[in-house]
Picture 1 (tube, one colour):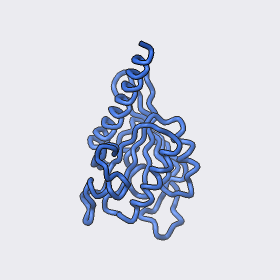
Picture 2 (cartoon, rainbow, N blue to C red):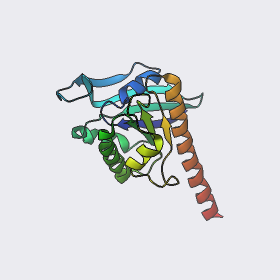
Picture 3 (cartoon, rainbow, N blue to C red):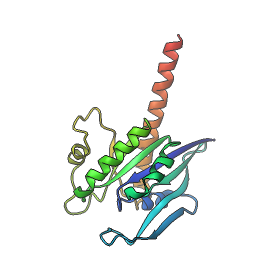
Picture 4 (cartoon, rainbow, N blue to C red):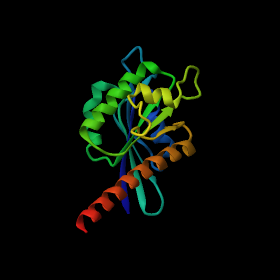
Length: 188
């Protein structure tokens, strides 16, 4: 059975823990603790990781690792991304004040690994939510050709999460196929 390690990262309150919980077929291992930040958008926060598992067909198991959203826990970002196959960055579309941190998180990950990424927009149904195009520009992806796929995802709805994960797995498989084809053409 093939094992795929996917990282679920993003800003505080974007839906990382909720996403892992909504699709995990095992009881989620979490490290949520009471937040000490009085300006936080939620009462509890992840301080190390969330872990869940999802069987993705008969031959593939997906391990989901949710990262903390706070930059003070960036050592966990570094630990988790090193062995990942792909990651999804969750961005709350209704909180433009978080876009800068999301952009920094992307840069952090891209400096460490060159693996497939999907941007998942959450909270798109909230007042003041930005469009896909505007969020892409805010994240530094003005060129549509060079940007990763951007999907709308509701972390609390399993079907929505599965669709986002399918997009991410397809990104991974496309990159893997391209690398295999390139290797074969060099050998020929």
